[in-house]
Length: 513
Image (cartoon, helix red, strand yellow):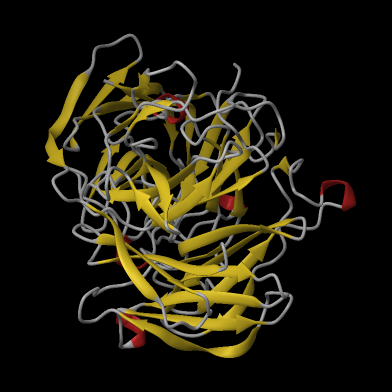
């Protein structure tokens, strides 16, 4: 059956015909957990990446023609998180708050690993005929990540290639590792952008008026250096813009976006982007708790070289759009982009699937394209019963159902009796909820029903049977810096054996209620 979502081998080309202008929309534009989003425009196409923490593939890249409709087209980290070693504690660690930029015919992504430092990963050169990157074909080839700035506690980086050839990097610090927070720093990098030329130094202290300043984005416009960042904390904070004629300051400061009288709390860190038609927008996230950090977009007007975001500095819920003669506002258009069915008829997993254990191992799965199914092999649980091979998806921030047709085939050796389990899982930081397959060697259906408050209920259905409720309703809980995730597992205890059972998955789908 035809596949409806991009896989690693899908092709997406920048420079194709796109929407001419930004349509009307209702926030959130992307109602899924894309924390700390950064966005750039390459020609007439917009690219987004976000924090992926311990999930692999990491640094998912989304593309859009109009800033409203988004598709996953690539992932810069495919198989293993840089610096990961067997036994590492992964939950909530590794890939924090990236910045994506275009330079010298490549895409560059800088991100902070709070325990290791600031990394850069860039796409391989594409040749002279695509030096502007307007004709890049996704998926791209990516070079190995480079640890540009080894340091514990350095996070939230953003590079800037200046007109004189110098390269700057702004960043924040994680108090949990650095022993100090609420300060922002600046360093100069070598001309290739891959090493430190001059050490970081503090250029802003937000302790008194703007505590928890973090999430830097660095721009240059009309001769000003702009340092955009949130302050005040994820759920209750505000957006700050600083500007200076000199990279190290001193900077003057304005609060440019705050919740005010609206229901949009935060609003937290994001990115400024312009359109080919000369419009300007600011994309940011809103932390809504269990469903994670969803993406909003605000119109921006520049007045006296200051950006005025939203409506007079408060977030807007709706935007009427810039299409001539059009006042139609679309309702949550991106729900349809991600809530869909996967038939597993490719030799690669679709990019909206992510493994939770910091890497992906070949012994975990087989994409059986000929049989149009996915096979997950049982993998021993690690310390604290952690299952590294959980295969998960982000959830939509509304009521939905997740359904899968599966067949569990545990290993039949007597030594393995009772060792293996498989099924559907809803996972968070402090609690996970499992629906084990109730029957062996037989196809059956597993279903999760979730309301808009992320209260869930499991069901099972044997072939040609009726749905049966399993267990009591449960309240899902968020993960470590992320929202709740839903997906599949196939696991076993620590018994030593030379083979594994498996879970076959015919299809998996998410539908909105």
